[in-house]
Structures are given as structure tokens and as C-alpha cells.
Image (cartoon, rainbow, N blue to C red; front, side, top):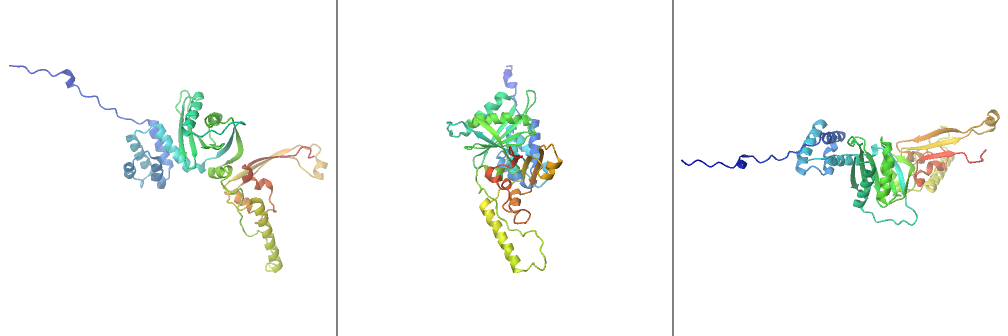
Amino acid sequence: MKMAEKRPRESLQHSPPSKVFIMDVTVAEYIRRTVLRIPRSEARTMLTKWKFLSDSQLQSLNTNQKKENISKEVVELCQENRATIQHAANLDMIYSYTYRHKMMWDTYQMIREEGDENDFFDLENFKKKFEESLESSFNNVTITFEEFEDNEIWIRVAWGTQYRKPNQYKPSYVVYHSQTPYVFICKSTNKSSVPLLLQALLVAANYSDIHEMDFQSRCLDSLKDIILKRCGQSLQIHQPQPLQEKDNNLENDPRIIQEDQHEKERIQRIDRETFGDGPQPKLEFAHYRLKTTFRGDLINDTLHDIKPFRCTVKFSSPHLLEAVQSLALAGVADAPLSALLTCITQKARNHFNIREREGAH
């Protein structure tokens, strides 16, 4: 009887199983928390802008449920697509761009030395130089770039340490308009990172120096409009009723009516000469730091040792510049208004230091 031939040992072995992708726990948690921050009514729109989930995945996502359940579904879909920390950072970038008005922005201006030519801007070269500059002095960072409309480059940097991964929950945001010397940096809890960001920007954009401007706001769009001179450097003219009481007997006196009309026309003429007729950007505050002395004969007689005193005056309003332009017409300030109030758009600053002139006393 012929014995059956033994099969080779190799044929008895099974082929090795394919590797199963397991998304990093920190990536999954960061995506989940980012989705929870998005209003439910805007979840589908923002996830579409992300361009990481497929059309079929977006259609399968049920956004008519609790946000916690939405976030879990998104994480499951990201698991299917093998999401990394860069994908999660891109989602955070889109969220931050959409809600940029929730952050406070500082303005910086870069300077080139005389004779330096304005090189043709190349985005890929800019990214490479920026990353090399940061990583040469800080070897544990997550850097993400995103180009939005109007040549606006957003940079997101999450900082780590030699022994810790980058903290994705406290990143720095930088907004740079190519072919301009202006940069906007979000106020960050990691203040020590700002010098590194500034140095990386100088290297990447080929500038020699950078300085902070006295100009900040939550409204990034208005900062850009004023800095880049995309708006009329002016205040819009309103015509509220003057806030002054009148005698009932004189209220209908033609002479009083005519005088009021002439005064209103005078103030409007001053407004046009001072502010122009352009649209008004939105700012929320202006700071005036004073270092001055008391004045008057009575003060000089009673105070032998007159020393300057310091104080800070802050004007704030949901729309400060519209409020400023209405002061005279509202009857609460004389016209023309102080140049310190009307020069905010022309000088592109809302922080002022006011000191006594030398030899004033």
C-alpha cells in the first residue's frame, strides 16, 4: 500500500494576518473634543470643509443627535480613515479660523534692511524654512499650515518638551499675509514661545527684524482691513438725536430748530473733514496710559512737591469707532473730537502712551 506523501510544512502555515490600524488614543480624544466644541447645527458644514471624511461617510453621519454621540461617530469614521495628529490639527485649524473672533490678536510688523529685494514668495519654501527654524531649537513640536482665502496663511504650533508630547490643547496660532510685512499672533498661554515664532517668521519670510505694534483686537478681520488699508481710513457718519433737554415752550421755536440744524450740519461737516465717508472697522477698546501732573494755581500753592502720576483710561464698546464718531452728534462731546480718538484707524493703533512735554512746567 502506497503511503500518502507528506505535505510540505510550509503549506500548513497560515499567511500572517494584515496589520490592524489602531488610532492613537490622544488623537482620538483630541478629535472628539474638537467636535464637541462645534455647534451641532454647523457640524456637517465644518466636517465637510475638513475634507478628511468621504462623501458617503458624511452622509452616514447622524447630526440630529446628542453632540457626544456625534463626536463618537466621527472618531469611528476617523479610525477607518487612519487619522493622525496632523489630521486632528487640521480640524482644529478650521475650527479656529471659523471662530477667530473668540481669540485676542496682537499685530507685528517685519522689516527688511535697505537694499534687500522683495523675493518672490514660495509657499513650500516658506513652510520648509519655518519648520527647520523651529525644529532646530525646539525638537518636539507639531506644525500645521493651512492656506485660506486672500493669500492668508495660518500656522498652528503645538509645543512639547524633550520628554513630553506636544500639548495639542494649548497651541499657538499665527496668521501671515504673503507679500506683506504684517503678522498676527494669537495671545497664547505659552508666552515663552513667541520669540521662537518671531525668529522662525523672519527666517521663512526673509526679513531682518520684527516689532510688535500697539494694535490688538478680537476682531482679526478688522485688524487686517486697517493694517492692509482695505477700508477707508475713516469713521462712518451717524445721525442720532442730540441728547439734550429742551424747554417745552421753546421746542417748536423756529429759531431753535434752525440753530439745531445748523449745529448738526457743522458737526457733520467736521466729521467728513476729519473722518471721511468710508466704512468703519470693528474694534472693541482703546487704551490710553497717562503720565502727567496736576495743574492750576491752587494745586501749585498747596502742593510743593509735584510728581507725575500715572493712570490708565480705557474706552470700550461693542463697536468702539462707531461710538466715537457719534459722540458729538449725541451732544456728549465737543466737535471736533480729540485727535487721539480719531486717529485710531489712520495710525493703526489702539494703545497710546501720553506723557508731559519736556519743559511743560
